[in-house]
Length: 489
Ligand SMILES: [Ca+2]
Image (cartoon, rainbow, N blue to C red; front, top):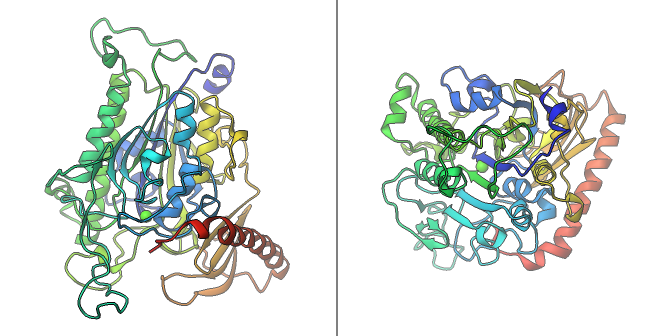
């Protein structure tokens, strides 16, 4: 077995890529069951590595989810508990909280961020303040894909200051290249991400060192198993904003799915563009001969959005163009549709191909997993996540006894197959669907039947654990984070 052999030799310094998507549902990859469109390049990553069936985001919304994947902590322990605003003074991820980028930079890694940030625009919380050397992207929650302008909140009136006159948020151009504002009008943002990510990989490869590329005549031989080419290793964080609204895609992508109704067509087109972008990066890794030694992780940040602003014809109906598969709930919900994610992991050198892993993992596990694989020391950091490499390389069980979530008044815990949701909402802003909901996910992955009344002893146990965890998050928020932070949307 590949892993057993690799254990006996030098593991070198792998490269790391995190692909993150935005509001993509559990069912919206063809390898996750989508049958009306295909994602062949992402499916190939699954075939060459691991597809997870019980992988979670640590939040059902953007900013806290991103805080968890970058810091290895529950969002509340990283100072980010809610969706962040988008003006240029918005504080976000506190400067003192280390990210996987700062940790890898200390180990000599090149670091790059290309895509959406949504962890604050104010000085101290930007990508450059959190360990990223090379940067291209936007820092608010969403942009027009062609003008790169943030339009969110224009329908909200000023809080009584000038009634009936202004809007809370004026349009805000939001595209930055290594800290400088740049204008790339008319260029589709997913394509911009792909172009910059491919360039970053190319600069890591042998061609950038004046050596022949792997595909050229007379190319250097493949390194022995467990050996890595002489290169400065890199870490690249590629958070796509697709398929988050506004629902934009170039005509060539929409044409691929002309047979679908508009809401589904545009979702398929946006994800097809993401799939092509991932494929372009993987192709470049292969050209540079560094595919085997590059760890790739992919997940969505939260479940599909049912917000009416997904429509582009003015209607105010809920949008159901995204699919959580058989799961219940959407973005904002702590039922699994909001937090259980499509997720893939691929590292040919260390992780056996063709696996479907049902063990529980979460976004916060990415930091310790990557740092261990890079030869760093996770014990130097405050982390809630755990290394999941044994889970994918040695068929070990999940390292988690339990995982917790909070969102507004909702609190949830999963312990083994039991899941308890307190004040669980199906629709944001509406009353809870149930005050107390208990299920076993192996039997009822769609969380349809509530067993709370039949199993009061399990409810009591899980409730005590969840409430104790939440009390810790709340206390720390009041004492440590809230005094330093304002500007939450
Ligand atoms: Ca999101």
